[in-house]
Length: 385
Figure 1 (cartoon, rainbow, N blue to C red):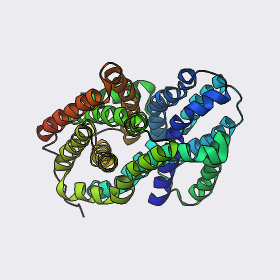
Figure 2 (spheres, one colour):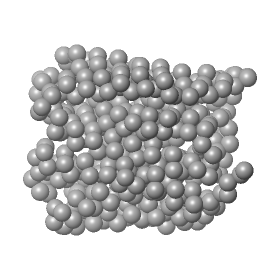
Figure 3 (tube, rainbow, N blue to C red):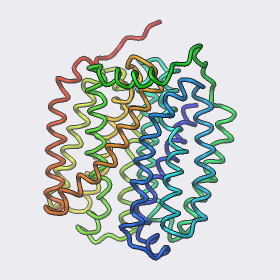
Figure 4 (spheres, helix red, strand yellow):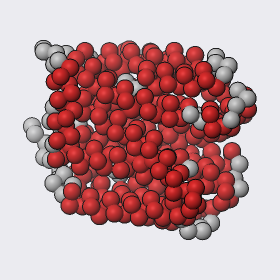
């Protein structure tokens, strides 16, 4: 089951992040400005995050399996349909529709892990799942840059759809069912549940850091392609191969980091991850050679893998309905990802990359320092036999 969910997270995130590198090509194909077709990125991220507020409570009502399978079917159909559009407006509309349909897979997979895996072992499982997300981000960005010349942009979406169909056949066989609740809470109770999560002190600091971490990493990652082109004159191939390295730590070390969080507590891992991100951002702000920049990008990914999965583990342990808690987590994550790109751009345009990376690096360092007292209670929990 864990391999299935990790692969699903990888595929979903790969098709999200394969769009940005092909935006110039799409602008040519649709005979429009890159800025207009570029609206496809927020057109996906914003509704994806918003819909998780719906999928979470729905999975609490009907079970995790139907929501994951239904969302995966929507992903397959809508991704294939995207390959058939012939205008920028239709492309943006299909990205929005795909976000609405596909947004039930990953957050409800996180909730399913919370249902089935004890908290003292949950970090390991979440490490795999978040590793799949990080790997998908890198593979999508690299695959978009490297695959478009070979397959065409239509081929990228058809490949993602066929991959989803293969995944669905496996999911039908191995995805476990979870019991439905005996009573269904009214909509007023659902709204009250979200308020309760945000009133809880543990929830406030956890969701707050999910947002901060998403802003910092998404802001830097989104602009790395432009940074590499301006600093070193890299083309699509060089940028794609460099960004591919961003997902290596998550794929290789995600489960290891999860075990460390289970054994030593998230109180140590989360501040350390933010500190790693801060150091990497500050290193990218100075004129390093290409090899050092590539190493910094890979290590920057390690900082993400040391923060987001442990934060997700805490979310699965918050009081209340787990699907609702994870829905709010993914909503916060994607809101931060969308805002992070805009925030980095706001500093980048007047100040350039050194200033923007310096600002984000200092912000991450402050976040790391504050995380030490804020998360000091997140100590390892002994197994309950």
